[in-house]
Length: 532
Image (cartoon, helix red, strand yellow):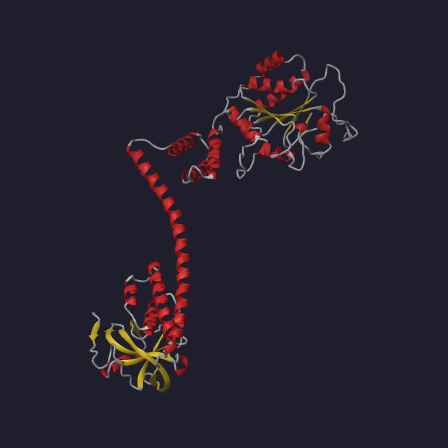
């Protein structure tokens, strides 16, 4: 369905340089959030039933109406109190009737009008109106000319900075010589000022005051546009730099792809992906590693997080997830190795053989721990080495003496610069197998201070992974460090416990003199019971 277009002749009303003839009574068309200035063209949308009927009658009776802006746009049926006191006499040039019953108009403002009295409200508003003449004083001519020049200059700058205004407006403004008409034209062209400000300019009949008000508005608008342009240029410079780098990288990638080459970062990502697939990780660990790899691939190499993520992935792929040493428990071979490496120590060797015999009868036992207790230099560490050699497993030793921070055992948080895994994970990486014989040496020499207590991290001992953990300590120190500070349900029993109770915790840290026949005492500990 096509719209109906009516071209209306304009010879009934004087338009142009001659002053228009305005009747004393005109139909009133209320406008919402719109101000029509004299000598300006504007499209209007009319949807009210009463307004559509007003347009139909106006077309038949001279095409001249009066438009007044509503004070409150939400009122559907405004009265005289709801309309602004100054409006515009308007001539209807074209009318478009749409299929939904609404009307589109192209109108031209002719002159300012004052709303004197509403004489009828049905079927539409009709009122007595009178012309509102402009006030131009001869004493203000010089100031008006100066204001006109400033207004034209400021308006040119506003048009050049604003993306919403056409450049043709500069030429039109420069060709207007009449000050009042220039002010009305510029005020109607500025789409960024509010309806209230435009209505205030329309109601100002003093030309000098009107131009002074408009000049202030233009200066404020110019400052806002200059600040916005400055911010936009800064943002564009930053975005332009990033986009330029991005395009250059993409071009480099395209060139390298055509040449069959790839950049270093892409090679690293591909190598890490291959290592993750070949590492034999559990499904949950592999999922986390792939997520971190995808995050790494989207980072620039210069980012601070790049090195942290890369180090984390390097440690993940370097761990022996599916590499095991073949364990062979051969008791005669073990006795031969122990006798060859150590002279004497029969009770210690017998306890080791008992422990291995239990392991051979029940391979599924979880978390057994051997605790070697004795003075320095009696062979605690060398016994652990002999056990690992007899079983055909790797040997890992972690010295806990002097550690004061549990992060050295557990590992540091990744948020710290230079964060590394703990000694347990580092030992597994050095062993290159997930079931080495792990010895936690000098466990009695752990220290605690304001930085932390490493004894709190001993729950992280990987007994379920390595299957064999050996702990060493000296006589007096384990009494002071373990017995005096642990409950009686501790998994490490004190070798100096008497039948009448626990020894005093005030024992000296230095061991007393012993004969050369001293030997280590071994206790076999587990999660449920302690023997020794």
